[in-house]
Image 1: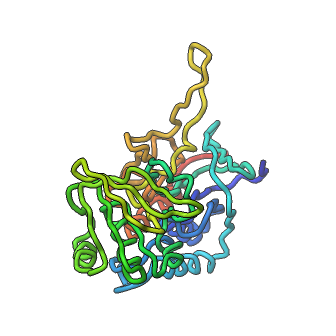
Image 2: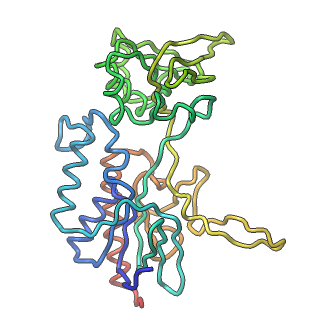
Image 3: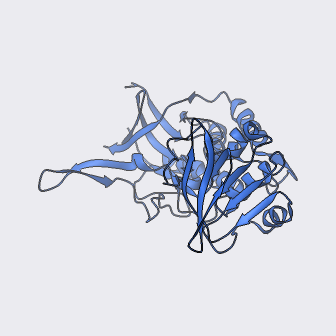
Length: 320
C-alpha cells in the first residue's frame, strides 16, 4: 500500500492513456500512470494511413512518438503492473494492482481491449507455437511460410496486408458472408495474387505436432484442410474491464460479482460526452468505453477529454 494520495491515476498507456497523461502533465496535476505495456493495440498495428499529420506511419513508430512526448514531461509510470480492482470509499479511490495499492482522488481508465480468442481445439495448445494474435509482433517469424488470418474486419485485413508481403500464401478465413473492413484495405487484399479469401467459413481446429502444421475449415458443410505454419487470430477484441467487478455477498451468502462501474452488454465502460462514468471521480476513455468507432485518433481525442474532465472535477470538488 502506498501512503501518498495522488490527485489522479491514469490506468493504461495506449493512445488514450498517453494523451490523458500529456494533458494531465500540462495541467500540473499530481498524477501517476499505471500500465502493463506501452502503446496498447496501436503497437500491434502495421501501416497507419489515417492518423492526421502522417500520410503513412507504422503503429510502432507512432507509439514511439507518443511515448517520447509523454517521457518529455518526466511522467511517473508504473510498468508492468496489471490492474486488479478499482474501488471508491469516502471520496477516495483505491487502485489495486498485482504489485501494490494506490490511493487517488480521481481515476482515468484507459485500459483498451485485448484479442478475442477463437475457442477451437489446438488454439491454446499451439499459442506462441504458430498461433498468434499480433502480426506486427510475430509476423516476421513466418517469412516464406504459408499462413492463415482468421477474421474479416480491419484487424484481420491489417494482418493480411502485412503477411502478404512476406508469405507465399495467405488464407483469409472469414465466418461472415463478406469482408467488413476499410474499403482501401479490402481492395489491396483482394488484388493480391497470394491472398485467398474464404468467406462463410469457420475454423474447426488447429493441429500440428510441436508447432502448427495446419487448420481444418468448414464451408457449405464441406471440410477443407490448409497447410499453414502460422495462424493469426483477428476476430475481434474484448474490453479490459474485468477489474471493475467487485465481489459482493448475496442474501444466500454466496459471493457474486457486481459491477462497480456501469458496463454495457459488451462489457464496455459506459461514459457520457465528458467521459464520466456513473461513479463521481472515475472517468474512462478509448476502446474500453462504449464510444463508437475504435480508432487511434479517436482514442487520443477521448484521452484528452477525459484528462480535462478529471482536472475540472478536481478543481470544483472539495476532496480529502
